[in-house]
Each structure stands twice: as structure tokens, then as C-alpha cells.
Image (cartoon, rainbow, N blue to C red; front, top):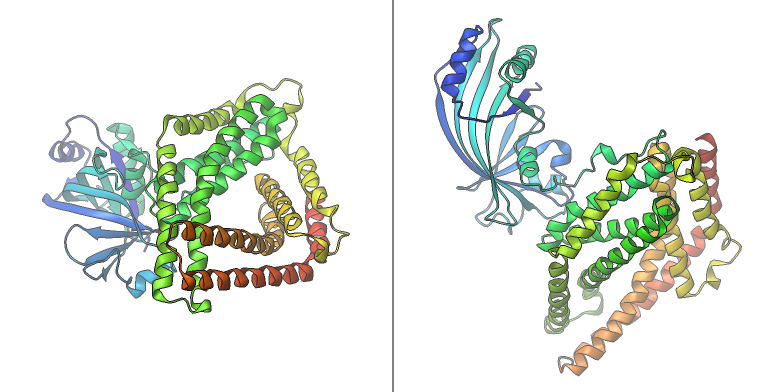
Length: 505
């Protein structure tokens, strides 16, 4: 059965005893007070796989039994972890939910609670809790936020609980808060939610001018950057860095697209700042991708443990250097100002546009943007896929990426239909992406061989292993050219679906 949970923020020195006395005047009865204490840490994946399903995984300060709570029903399940829970193999019940993603800490909570049962004049029963809570930032241990919260919970008496909530809000002046403890705590600490769900305010709608839509599109990318910055700076999971890097790419492209409406000089200046960040992100991300690739390909070349250790050690040392520079940048005043400038663009969404082109309907002009991105690919359609050089295939991949970004910027106009069309383009981009990764890997492996030789960390076994890995990349690149040749002729079908959607509006 679904439960109703209401949380109110309390100010001043009101106590639960005083509150119960006030409620008695309104005909409510209360039971005996019970006292509890709690200390837990919330866990989830980088992409919020538990949060997205309405689940909360709590690790108590003591013991190996964790709790998996369903927010909608209030049901709580005990799950036993090993003594080294964060590094050991996950219990099957949790592993099935996170599906290979890392389990990460998100929030610390310590609370002292007084709880009582409330009986309404209509004989409904529900629980009232008075909690003194300290929320702790898992990334900055000295950063805490203290709140006094009042909770109301019931299931059988949903209407009674809702009415009681209006009394607390309207008659007693308590502030109703949205969300559960995890959401309230992260908001109080100004931290993103697991998975970084983007607020609805950034959604583009058909009534927006192109100026307003552009401000929302850029603001959205700024929000995604902000949400993934703490996890990237702390090096919690490579996916934080990946999402941050993608957001900077989308933001740079959006600024170029919206330059005529937001101001070319201003947009170009922001693009330069984003390029600075993108360069630092790229150096770390490329090494992450390289190390991940080697992890899968070492067995294919029968690399010995000693050779593997030497190659990985060299690359991890290199990653340590570039990740240090990235972390310094992400906590700098320059980077903070960049995010603030992107948020400022969003706040200007309602400024007057007059009769200029910035006041044109975004819905009416979106097809023009999409057609321009499409035309840059269509003019290559007559060429045989085998005629493209590696450099030309990379450029074509960038064109597919730009088409995808443009369609995504305006996908709110078209809903699920546009998302299906975008997916039909993704296969071309992904195929060319693997081809480009192989080309980059060849270059990186050649640099690796040179760097290890110069540093005296390479011997014949290491160089033979690197040579075998280079051949794997060449074979993979060739395979992807063959795959692209097979699907390239199917591109017009995706174009037809897209144009049909644009005409339908």
C-alpha cells in the first residue's frame, strides 16, 4: 500500500511537546513519546539507478546489514553486506539493481528523533516525528547542514494525513518540503541528486522564442556540468567525467548555434572558456578509455602479468598528472565563473526581444537548424563508404554528432517520436566512434612505446605486446569501415523519417 509522507522545516524553538499541546486544542490526540537515534550513509550509482526507481540504499554506521527502502510504499528490506562492503562483491539483490555500475556514497545523515502516534478527530492514525538532523557532505567531510524537521506519515488514513498537513502548513506556519531525506539533504548541501535529473525549468516548449529556447538549452548544459563537477573533481567514477565532457561539447555547439540571437562575441568568449575545460577533460578521459580498452585486449595478445603491470603503471602515472591539473581547474575561480555565466544566460530567457529575429518562435525555426545539420551529411551521401579516409570518417562522425545534438536540443517539441529518430542516427555515430577510437588508440600505443623506451620502462616483451595491440586496432578499424559500408546506404531511410516528423510538427 502506498504511504503518504510529509516533511516540514521547523524554525525557532518549538518542541514536540508544545506542538502536541497545540494539536490537542484542535481535537488531535497523541501517544507516548519515543526517542531514537540514527546514523546512515546513502549509496547509489553515478547515474542514479536506485534513485530513479524510488529506492534508497542506507548503510548504518555500525553493522553489516544495510537497508533498501521503497519510498512509494515505505517498505524497507534488510540486505547483508560483507565486512568490506564498498569494495567487496555486491549482494545479488543490489547487484541486479545497479547492473555493473559502481556503488558510490552520496550523503551522510545523523539524527535524533522523537516520535509519537497521532489520532485525528476522525479516528485516523498516523505517525509524527520530530527530528534534529545533521546532513554531511561525503566529499567535504567538514561541510555539514543542520535542519529541524517534522515528519508525518500514514497509509490507511491518506486523506487524514493530507488534511493534517494543511493544518501544519496554514495554521501553524510550518514550511512543507519536497522529497525525502536524501533529496532534502542534498538540496540543503547544494549537491546534485543521483543521476542528476534535469529540472523541468530547462525544458523547451512550443511557446518559447528562439532566444528563450537558446537560454534554456545552454542553461541545461550548464546544470549538467555543475551536477557532474563534484564527482569528477573527486574522481569517484569515470562516468562523472564523461557526462561533464559531453555537456561541455553540447554547450559549445549550442553557443555557436545560438550566437546570432544571444550575441556572437559573448558566445564566442564562453566557447573559449569551455574549450579550456574540454581540453583538460579530454586528456583524462582519453586515458580512461585507453586503459579500459587495454583491460579488454590484454588477454587477446596473451600479455603477461609483468608486461601488463608495466604498461598500466606507466599510463596511470600519466593519468595522475593530468587528473591533478583537471582537479585544480574544477575548483578554481575561473571555472566557477564559467558556470555562473552559463546560469546567467538562462536567467536572461525572459528579456524583451522586440521585433528582431530573437523573437521568432523556436518551434517554427527548429526545422531550419535541423535541415542545416542534415545537409552537411547528405552532401556526402553520393560517396561510397570505402572512399572515405580515416580523417574524413572522423569529420563525418562529428557531423552526425552535430545532427544528434541539434535534434536533441529541440526534441521537447516532438516528444518520443524524435527520440526514436535520434536513435536511428546513433548507430552511424557509434560505428564511426569505434573506428575513431581505434585510430586514436594506434597513435596512443605508438606514443606509449616511445615514452616507455625513453623512460627506460620498456623491454622486448613490452614492445612486442604493444605491437600486437596496434594490430588489433588496425583490424578493428577495418571491421568498422566494413560495418559502416553496410549501413551507410540506409541513411536516407532515417532522413525520410526525420523530415516526415518535421513536416508533421
